[in-house]
Image 1: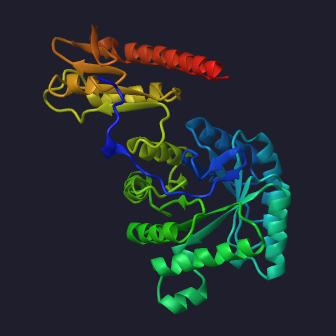
Image 2: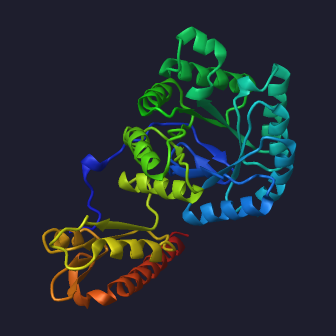
Image 3: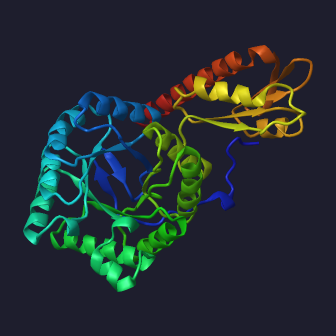
Length: 377
């Protein structure tokens, strides 16, 4: 049996969208769904910001956003961009000069709402700076900061108001013959965000940036984001995403990948399948998985690992994973490789041995990939 069998009920048919680029990262079209996050350091603290960008990139972030609220921040941005291993998005609100400065500093993308930065002349200056410096733009509509005239028209933040806001901002860019943009319509309410994104997806072909804004702390925010983003992704909506958590930005990246991995849309690192444990467990499943998650963080090669406490579900799960361990009795369990029984293993050697097997498998898969790429050339 194949470890990755094709099943028609697993297929997700992504919405067709235009492809743009955020620096070297393609967004939209047939490009992989990219994972973003945002630094929470002071941008003027260049060393701290670069360190956080690097940590997020190490965790898998494809793109990192940096807030630029003042001139000192856009000055610092130039050094941050130069040191960053991933494209940097400059977060701009209201101040058109900050947008121009960020483009000149090397930002790969400006997060800006064209309708909120002043006169038509000022908009034209920002668009010209973006075009001149190869900068894309993200239109970022948020339910908490809708334009006054839309709130008066609709009475409250609602999907129709958010979609209208987004389309209005899009027209401003299109009137300047600028099409390198993506768009988001975020809300902290899952129902509001989902409805707005569905309507937006039907109304345009622009790449869509997904997010449930201000989702909350690590646990609550992860659950809210998984429900909101997961359902939209399942419908084929979304070309890039950010999970917004009141937590370390690295955690946002991890959660983003876990959502994509659960839907089979992106694969990075080890996907651990483990049981919640019960009285049948032949070893301490929870502590073992905690240790393995930490020890295997450095693995970027996609693979699957099952860690199951007993023989009720263990052998069946192991059939579908690259490496597996099923608890038995008398202080030992069974190791499975490629779905087949390989050898017995003492519980006390479990973590070290599994880490060794995963690292070896990663090396083999990387070698196979390099060989395939060489053959293709």
